[in-house]
Length: 154
Image (spheres, rainbow, N blue to C red):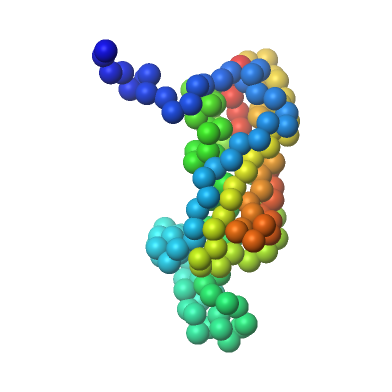
């Protein structure tokens, strides 16, 4: 058997018309470790003490380091879920997103992202697939909700 990177797929790919409103996709859970906090701080340049100074947070009544909203939101990147892999080469690009941050995320929390196909809008040669996103923590508390839209080839 000859190896081909093109054939090295983790999921079968699908065309736009094969997706259905109501389909649910889940990304693996991720724990917000000190390493994740440090990596996000380094990548974002955000140096507010609410994200790295435990004494500061204790004075404010928080139990531990508090994740930046975008640090939480990136856990809902579709590339970490089966959805992007099933879109395969039909995926053209990320069009838009909106999000609401509903509860704090602390160091040590484990997050569970999910995506529900909420709209499929067909155009002439492309389509827009929209998903509602939610992220829950280990206690079942929804910490983020929102939506994301992606442009796809038909």
